[in-house]
Length: 99
Image (tube, rainbow, N blue to C red; front, side, top):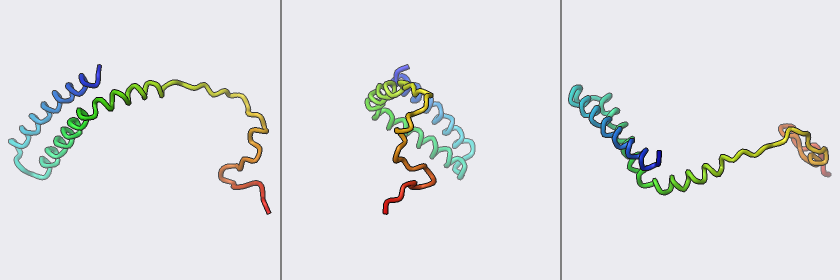
């Protein structure tokens, strides 16, 4: 599924959500619980509109994300002791004292 297809599907779903919210408003009137639902639906709609604006940016990010998923194998072998020379142990602090 492409990002534009997914955004189109979101548009269809938000239209259905708005219809349900309108039905709730007609049934229960203007009360705090219904206002919260209306506000949440509006916030979702605003997010989808912003998503449509950012589709091109997301397409570029998707390409970068696929490139970042490459696994790097880290060997289980022990490092040479010289690798750790002059390194402080975490949580203990400095082990060498310079006067």
